[in-house]
Amino acid sequence: MTKNLKRLRIALQKSGRLNDDCIRVLERCGLKIRFSKQSLLCHVENLALDILLVRDDDIPTLVLDGVCDIGIVGENVLQEKTLEQESKGSFEKVDIIQKLGFSRCRLSIALPTEKSFLDPTSLEGLRIATSYPFLLQDYLKRQKVRADIMTISGSVEIAPSLDMADAICDLVSTGRTLEEHNLKEVDQVMMSEAVLIKTPKYLNPDKQSVFDLLVRRIESVLKAEESKYILFHAPLDALSRIQTILPGFETPTILPLQGVSDKVAVHVVSNEKIFWSTLEKLKEMGASSILVLPIEKMLN
Ligand code: PRT
Ligand code: ZN
View 1: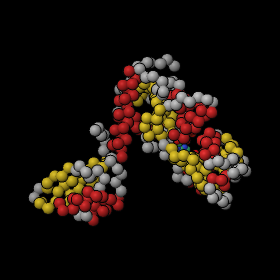
View 2: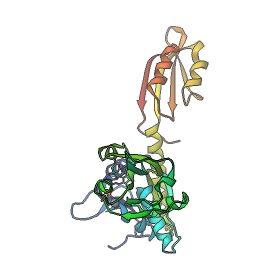
View 3: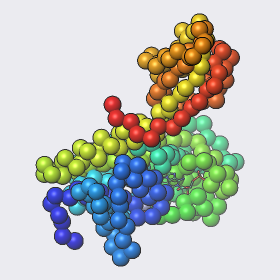
View 4: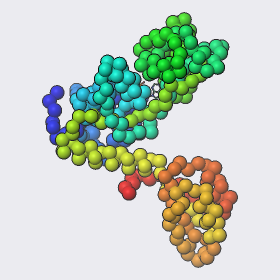
């Protein structure tokens, strides 16, 4: 694969849980991606960026070695690879540029529901099955517990029922898989979400400027996603009380309402999630015609 030195290269998961959200974020950044059925390298038409589609496990190494300049991967896979590298005496690391807020999960210890667990010392001497042996080893070391790590590459949750292991250390998001296998989550090893990573290798000025632009756009997309534009009518004498419950109310736009002297129209950009309970409180305080709108783009 010849490398165009002017084009930044990003490694993304080819298919799986990360893929859709990665593409969604890049498309929301305005990128026009030309997907190719024949090639794993896709071209972005309106930015000097190429996308290499690979297995998520390969992304940390591709970025560490500079084969790809940046990548998106789960923190769980990244930390596992980092610990594996460190065990081989290699301490060079990729930089985590940004947490992306999707593919959230946790790496947890789970036991059969009937087994008792008081604290991590309850794991002493057990056989624990996992696909994350380095993260598990690190956890056991921190907890000063000795246990047998059984490395298996998939379907970790069936190991206890086959008597291959006494416990597991696996990713959990809703907890349904554990429940279906009569397992209970007893401790968390780490929390994880997708992160944007960057190679420790030098980026030439062409690539650096594409990188800077992309990071700025991703930041703006994430900010817009979590922000909302709120409009409502409010009694003038309730404004100071409303200020205490509405995130982002420090700098509202207040507009007069034609022919009404005791009410105003209020426009606010909130950088936080707006819950139903907040809207209900607003209504109790006399607000009416409340609208909450998504924000498409945001550049401060
Ligand atoms: O083929 P490739 O190697 O690229 O993909 P993969 O099969 O290794 O990974 P994939 O696509 O399954 O997951 C990619 C990343 O998504 C993971 O590395 C995590 O960062 C993140 N992620 C988020 C998850 C989950 N949530 C998740 N729930 N990865 C896996 N799971 C599995 C978990 O292993 C268990 O089997 O889902 C099951 C538990 O889910 P719940 O909802 O029942 O708790
Ligand atoms: Zn994988």
